[in-house]
Image 1: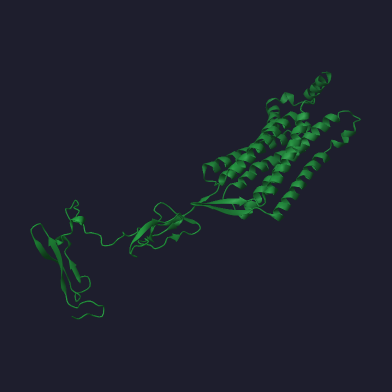
Image 2 (image 1 turned 180 degrees about the vertical axis):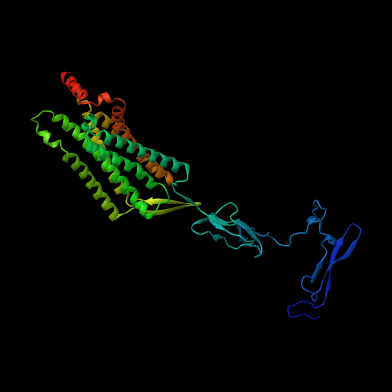
Length: 410
């Protein structure tokens, strides 16, 4: 017998199937092997003539017997990897599905491939797909609703400012300190517009701008309300001609109050930006990447909120104590209601802010900004606009004098 270099017999030979029936024993030729034949014809096999053992016999719809499997394990499909079985031959294995974030895209893979940072494996885990980028977008319904609300409130503020400028020489506007009203209206408009910075894909610059813009705008607003409250009290106490408090009724006091409060907040923000500035952070959660602004050391954020809360509480207490002072255009009652709304919104903001994550945290802060600013605008300025536009007979010096006489006689 001769063998070639590959260890095979150079001659051809037949493939015989032993077929044992009830009354016969036959050797049936079912194929032929010819090493000298051309590629693709070396093995010729007629599977339909083979008689398999009854254990493997299975008739399908075409009435053709099924060929038995000659391996101990089936092939692992894409999305699975082979895991060796202890104590079994190396060709025997289990098919284990790939873990989350891993995939295989070919048959009989030995290991799963980990998806890139910005991709994830879904369903069959036979491919990696890009992760969903999550941030409060201008294109989604929640973002559109907040943008429309902010723009409408800003437009309303501009309209009120226009009314105040047009009727600036009327008694009701003069009595409520025109300069502070203008400052407050401009700062409220800034508060409404600063909420737009929170919408859209965050960046390093927008993260720095978000909180500083928000804090500065609100500090001016609350300090203006505080100055208005103090001026209401001073105006009532200085009604006598020889009162020493009359020298404090000029524009210097409210300007100094607003400037001092603003300097304190600027100092806190400067220290915040120097020690631990806000920065962009990518929070990876399985199938999505959340764009967030890391506030740095949150103690600075809470200190700025605490200082604004302190100003709001002082304004509320002073306005509450002065709410019953006589006067036709006493703003103390209006300021009391506005500060009550402001404090209620921000007290409820803290637990909501801490219990949410991702874009909903941003949405909660935007809602608090819009709601508290709208409370200040509606409580302080809408009643004045009502008198100016719809009840002009009350916006006269004679009406003011009559009310003062009545209050004095009472």
